[in-house]
Image (cartoon, rainbow, N blue to C red; front, top):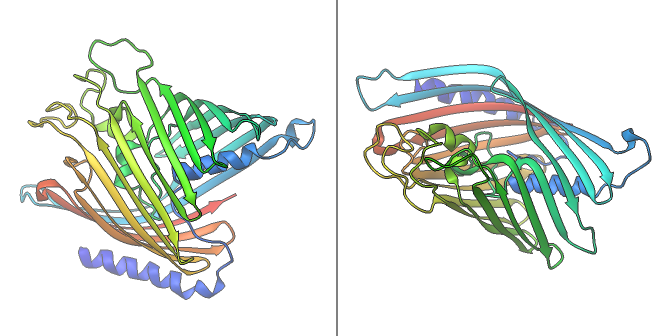
Length: 366
């Protein structure tokens, strides 16, 4: 079966390279990080109100992603039968509406279709103090400022799977030194809580991000309720009856150098242990999950990028691979159009299973 994975990947990869001469001038890119979402918001908030009509105040953008993939799971236990699967499907549709209400007021709604569900992924009001006061307030459903999760790949990094949190929240921030330093903090009602607690605001987040010079971004962040993270919360056995809330912390760095290289590194971890059996059913030991991700991207051409990943996790059981490595090619062959081919290999804790997956993604932004 492993041969079929390699053959399938080589076929798509050859299609990418054969057509490279027809590429357009746009650079390629991967999954949007939290930093990129913030940059998009800043650009939207900087847009002037063009006229009195509602249509002069509205900006619409979107994303469509179609994916084809083949994957294998090999179990160490001979009693379990190995698995393989393949599919072609509409992976994601996003439609964002941004309304410029005032020079200092922005409304934002993001509709998202994913995993056969249609939902409001983001919906908030953003206030800013303008040039005189570099402060801001974002109130509503949003990705709270914990982690950065930047990647060149189609598949989310382990750090995102462990820590990304989308909640109704109020987040305030302030920028210093010509916006080279950003401090933010917020509060929300997390999806995990201590046993016996009422349904109240119980979670807090804080972040420091810096851009000391061009090409270098770094930051640290803290969240008081790691079990409230979107994907992680789904594996927690009983998230509404935890012995105690466990905080998490994150650190990241992104370095662009020699005009063609981009290095991404991030670490996300719990501050304390979860009690035995709280996050993995039937588990007999306390767990302190952590995840890390490193990637190096190389711009072969203006619109052709190659990147490699090496990441992993501790105390991830069968939720996060203990080691993960792979490569991806991104080809922006038309304006706002990207074709990605990705291969990932994962090995899980105690050698319980290994995974191999090839994914091709065609994405269009508008």
